[in-house]
Image 1 (cartoon, protein in one colour):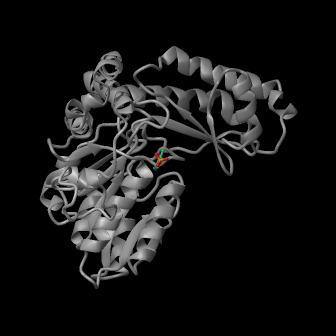
Image 2: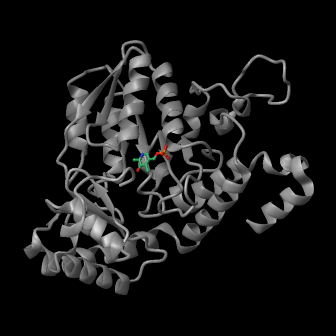
Image 3: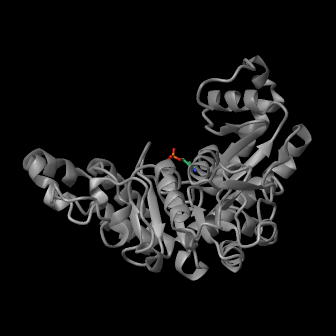
Length: 371
Ligand SMILES: *Cc1c(COP(=O)(O)O)cnc(C)c1O
């Protein structure tokens, strides 16, 4: 990170020959260390929202004309639902929304059923691997296989999974994926996202954003747009080199610890939290909003409570930062890299203390802009 700032200070704009392939180099390190992908299949660029638009748009444009249905989760993260709906509308397609169990999330049977309801018409199945609200971990190989059986591609949003659980895109048969680097990969606020395209699909898929960073010969300024070979074609415009340097550090930390170890510790931390919640919080109006089986969840746990918003505010006042997710969930993240079992114990004790003392009752019921 420091060396990038120094290089900027001395080389100025002359640093670009060194920097220009950073999105691909950091992508390769993320692929190998965290995602179970091969070199040349991942690039770090843009935001999850933009990457989802690029990949879903490319998949629909490449699908045969009779495949006009996208299967997606009605309870997925808002940006995912908005983008998929917009991309589908622009392609003359529509979204068939799954309504899964709110705690367990979608499974292969539900996906197969939705595909069977539109025989020969599904172009794309797009889901999150770890649900942002409940933390449910989907079965990537089984759901991907269900999509393939229906002749569709499968796109995974790994935002809450990358760095939290073991991901093996290669072994799982995934076609496409997107995800952020600012949650469990510690890339920093607003850090650039990543996208993955399995190599055999790359030549057939073209980004709907035709930017100069995806151009075959980027500096042949007058040439018409022709997509670059390989994953580079999914880039759009100039990357933030400072932001990439921070992502590189975050990815290196996760890769050094290793996703299996991160997953194992994440399960141990969340299991302790669930046990403490059962023992100390269930009698105070809290209910578990996450799967009970540690193997079926990522590294966060949601507790549901009718007064979730005010409790969340009171916890912030007690130095405990959790996320309120309407209507009634409080989400606690347990990133394995820097969370200890003692921290989990302290968190559960502090929640019990705040609620027992009724400290949340003095907070306003009106929501703030960022929850
Ligand atoms: C965090 C998150 C996002 C964020 O998208 P941005 O474009 O980076 O703001 C998108 N989807 C899911 C599932 C997320 O968890």
